[in-house]
Each structure stands twice: as structure tokens, then as C-alpha cells.
Amino acid sequence: MAIKQISVFLENKPGMLKNMCQILADHKIDMRALSLAETKDFGIARMIVDDIFSTTNVLREAGFVNRLTPVIAVCIPDETGGLNKVLDVLMSIGTNLEYMYSSLGKEADHAYMIFRIDQNEKAAEAALRNAGIRVLTQEEVSEL
Image (cartoon, rainbow, N blue to C red):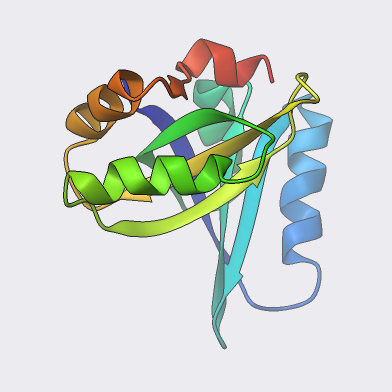
């Protein structure tokens, strides 16, 4: 099952990311992964958090526009070619990768990667599992 990522739209001006992070800290919300992309006028903070429901509500109440997006999280052995193996599987089923980012985790000998793909997440997850790649659940990601 795909996990949920929260995308937050931030005006591209000083202090906006800090304000968002302060609100999360004030509500004891823990980010498990974060990616920030920007354009001239706005940025998008994409994050995986420990409590999706609380986070989306807190951000809305604070005036931050946000939405949930399905993504796939995998645990990759920290070894040469680890990411390439995942990309091979995704390519073999004709999946286009829209973006990806990494996360820290408790297992020092593994990398955690978040993937947004352009197609059926269930088919991609099945293919990854069949290739011996560990696909994480929402609960597992919340505990990273």
C-alpha cells in the first residue's frame, strides 16, 4: 500500500519554511523525510510525518495549503548498486519516476527512499517486493 506524503505550498520568501517547521515543532509533529523544491514564486515542501491527520489539520489551521499524495517508500541496503536495483525494477514495468528523495532511519546499513511514480503504485509495489526489495508501510515510515 502506498504511503501518504504531505505537500505544502510555501510562498517563496524568507521565513516561510521556518514558520512551517515552527508550527510542526510546537505541535510535536516529527518529520521523517523532507524534500524542498522551489520556483521563483513558490516552493513545495514534500514530507513524510509521524502523524498525517494531525499534520494536515495543524497546517490548514495555520493557513498553509497542503495536500496528500501517494508515494512509495523502500528500504534499500546501503551498498553499491542498491538504488540501481530499484530503478531497474521500476523501469522494467514501464514506470516513469516523477521525483524521489531520501530519509534517515534507524537502520544504519540501509537507505530509505521515497518515490513518486506516474502509474499504479500497487503494481510497482508488487514488482519491487517480487524483486526482494522491502516496501515500507505507513506505520513503518512513521517509526523511522
